[in-house]
Length: 484
Image (tube, rainbow, N blue to C red; front, top):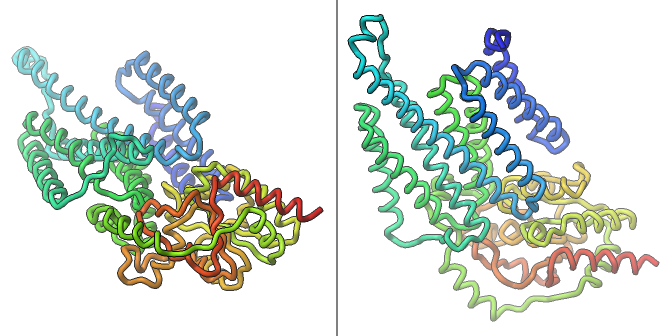
């Protein structure tokens, strides 16, 4: 439509403003739904506008790809369990990176095809006044950045998906050889990219792309499981920068704006999460696994010699129903056991008994940013009952009971008390200051970071072993039984 072509920049501006409002809305649980709607409208405007301003679009190919993508996306959204949401997000990031690489390749091949066509018919085209515009240095630089960032994002995200999904092929690598190999691949990739940028040599472009794909894999492979939330957030940022880089290649302002928003917001979130762990982003990405195999092995030996106190769901139900205040600390164990709805029911029963119940959320709890918030929102837990670490830490000393559900590293007192611990200095939820602590775990095994937790051996702590959903349901039954 001519109208859309004429006012395309205005439509893109409206889309950009809506994307900004999307980020603002998604910053809080109360406004998240509205923010999501803004994002859907903005994306619809961007896609429709781009479709009409494109030169000679292949309608059947574009339409077919959109329909296929929509079918796959809707099917995945309807069937994916919340426990698989982190790896699903990582897989989505990989597709953005792959798209950036394919667009860069298509742009270069298209230019080469035009160059060859012009060379074959140069005299006739020149006589007709037609001139072939070769790629400028700026254009080559855009392709260089977009392609190598996209390639790194693709393979790094695929590995993150495999690690979060516990795939056998996504094995963590370690050893003294890892960092030299990472440096060698990165420098070789950079050298090939610069050579391509300065000369336009296609062999250098293919070599750069291959090395970037390899670097993405070896870059993320050494990162420990406890650092995966930061990795997912950073890959989100990378996918945005890759999209922005390709936006310059396609001369699409909307893609540049949207990619920049995703890239900058992902980078800011990564910084916030690293601050919550008291670590730098460089340490997370190049410092190896948090904790590590040696630490985990040492802890296993120590665990066998330490005593802990265990109890039953009935004991826990009795203690909570007689408390004035309860704080629930959810972790990945709640997601793994799909216990969020059972936890919501427990919360409601306790409130009926006159108990003040709140939830304490650590920034890096779970396997992706906001993982616990998503689960609690799915169970319709009241927003005002969900508090961040900085909001609730000062309340723990006056709390009667803290119920920890499958969380480990985010409540580990070693972060405060043990200077030799790999997580020393990391801000934690100070559950150890509560009057009574109850922890639901399947076993005394260490958490994802491979570290033992002194909280489990605290004299105020009662361990309750079993599946999180089953244990919480038994607690609810015990409270109901005690109330009759």
